[in-house]
Length: 110
Image (tube, rainbow, N blue to C red):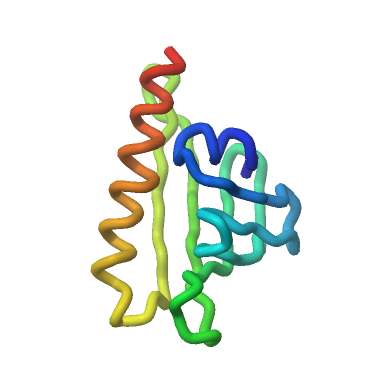
């Protein structure tokens, strides 16, 4: 939910509004959407799509955060309504462009 930090771990441009109803754009406009709901430190829900996808329906990405032992944070992530033709690419994209990237970013920040 922070344009500067998003760019720091992905290496790609991002414009992200922190407010519900606010738009976001990542990877030079390849990914766009609207933040539907936020609960600070607990929940982010976004309507989300890639530039190459059909205009409707939007997919929904949900990030649920909870405290975990040792001062860590547990993330429960779901991404629904992804076009069938994009499922494999999105699954790989989340792994390579987000989960691996943010893990490396957080390790370097220690």
